[in-house]
Image 1 (cartoon, helix red, strand yellow):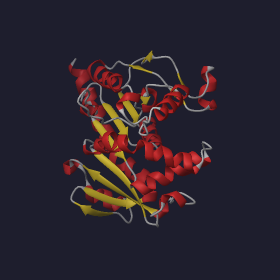
Image 2 (image 1 turned 60 degrees about the vertical axis):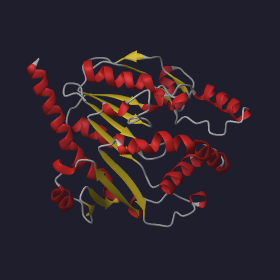
Image 3 (image 1 turned 135 degrees about the vertical axis):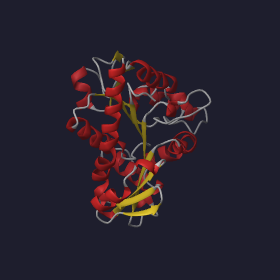
Image 4 (image 1 turned 180 degrees about the vertical axis):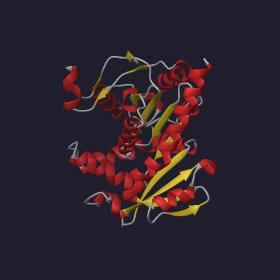
Length: 294
């Protein structure tokens, strides 16, 4: 953690909704004139798309049915930890981009599924913002979770997460239901060991819960809408949270535990704005004081 060079990390599994949370923070950064160095977690995968597919095929031939990009063998955990450590200490770091599709790849003249070259952050930034799979990973070799000043988990209930992944991979990426199901099963050991434990380290967790039947996610025809969901928001340390204010601003919200508020699914973005804007204010005030002391 660093007052001078703070870090915000959003962590959640594939299809959990971290991208929509990122958009909310980008709106806050723009409104509050905060200059953020934005890093995508996919850029710290070890292999590009073609090599990952080749290694997956080889793993299957070798009898490894649990090969996934959730675990340490296919990710650059030590590089990500070094980025967080260097930024917290000196406000510097190296990053790259993973080019998901043709639209992202075109400006770089590269193929989709490849990485851009590593480059250093340019110019002074107010904070580092990370969004990806591994913002709170702790293993015997690395402790990434100790560096972020604000660590946010985004995790739908498991059946909803599977529905979102099935729908996205079938309708957007063109995979068959069988292929997506195989991916879910193959990832499960790494999901249990490297994704789930992260949410014990987060400062705030957002969990979307559908209010419709999702008992068999593999036959769901669509993703439950925001209006068909509630969002459970849990604070690790609720002392600084103004719950009466949130309850008054978020119609239909209620407290389920002393550190947990439940809001309507359609109010999730507003809840984030109300919760995190004061966090950003305090973060920037501490940074200004730290800069003044230099």
